[in-house]
Image (tube, rainbow, N blue to C red; front, side):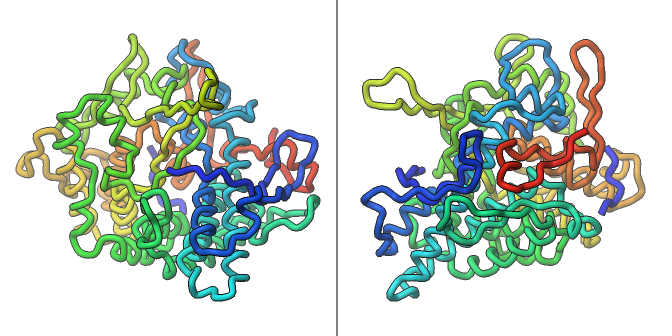
Amino acid sequence: MNLKPTIYKRAAVAVTVALLLTTGCTKFLEQQPDSTWTALDTPQKVAKLLGTAYPQSSYIVMCESKSDNVADKGIGESERPNSDSYLFQDVQSIEEDSPEAYWAASYTAIAAANQALKACAEAADSTLYSAQKGEALVARAYAHFMLVNIFSHIYDPATAASNPGIPYVTEPETVVHKQYERKTVAYVYEMIEKDLLAGLPLIQDEAYTVDRYHFNRLAAYAFATRFYLFKKDYQKVLYYAEQAFPGDQLSLHMRPWNSKYNNMSPAQIRDLYANAAEDANLLIVETKSLAGRYMGRYRYDLSFAKEVEILGNNITGGRWAYPVYYYGNQDYFVPKNTEYFVKNSVNATIGQPYVMNVLFTTEEVMFNRAEANAWLGNYTEVLKDLNLFASKRITNYNAATHAITMARMQNRYGTADQRIASLETILSFKRAEYVQEGMRWFDMLRYGMTVTHTRINGADLVLKPGDDQCTFQLPQSVANSGLELNPRK
């Protein structure tokens, strides 16, 4: 790895749905709310609407499959979001787990946020709606943030002002055919920051019945640490990490892999992993996805060799507490995803698969803080976070034998550069923590890592930084609405 600095509730609400699918209409299309939603005239109604302001589609399968976490096992479940992504091809699917499904779900979420903001602004007493306004602004910022990092080139100060972004939509649609433009990555980041900073002070956890299903304060601060990490504004990463967990509070809210989880069955872990009862989960969303059914079973997935590479020997000399299970000889998985099958009706035998996705965790705040400190040269703080993480993740942890030191990191990665040694360690720990969750792909983009996928026949597929396939393709239908597709050779 080359780290040289380069620089749960579903509400049955349909409002202002961003279609952008492969139907006859290729624009954003307004749909009138049903009869119970024609008047968003109370904070409670707006709050219920905001339950749909989060993308109810998953990026996990397509992003994980494009990263270096997976291998060609030769056999396994064949779904286009998995196979096309591994082969560095545009995904030929509009169903669950596809880029097109995520695009549509994100703009549907944005539409809900915009409708909520409109209701807040038009209320007789807008001060009663401040919590709802805050959630809508931060949710709108998040959906655009994920879109720009999936469908545009990753943020780089040197190129952000010239690289195409994605449409930043801030108003409910009042016409069927409306022209949009992508503008630039820099512009999208400016708008995300504007919404985020406006919404953060308004968030009120007291407004939620179950705060983990909404942008509560902790989740919003966690989002801020991610946003500013991607933007390379490291002092602000530290500021928002401190707002989330002052002092040493972070250590009290981490997922207990080497204690409580260590005594649980796979089914018990799956039930708790993406549950609001897990204190480490800061924001959870219900998504239509097959990951709960097929993760580990895909053809292009975690193999034995990849499991050893990611979850085998680590810098502490100890053993990761993550439990790895397998189906057959090649289907390896850490129990994280549980499918919730929702029947189309009470007596139906068919339905839709759903998975609860964890969007932000306590651990990510720690990783973002550690990475920011590495860039700022605060290596004592880096070591403090890394040792804290190890104390929660290494089986039978013993500080005397498992302690991480700068010398240990430098020896491990063969470098005298403290920053490089720190970043290598942080990213390897983060890779282990979020295996089979799609997070690795974004780190690979941020650090310009080359991805090599080896086919079962021995042929190598190589994706280099800046290659066309580093961005997922926009839905083909949006070209008819005037949006430029990502270039393809």
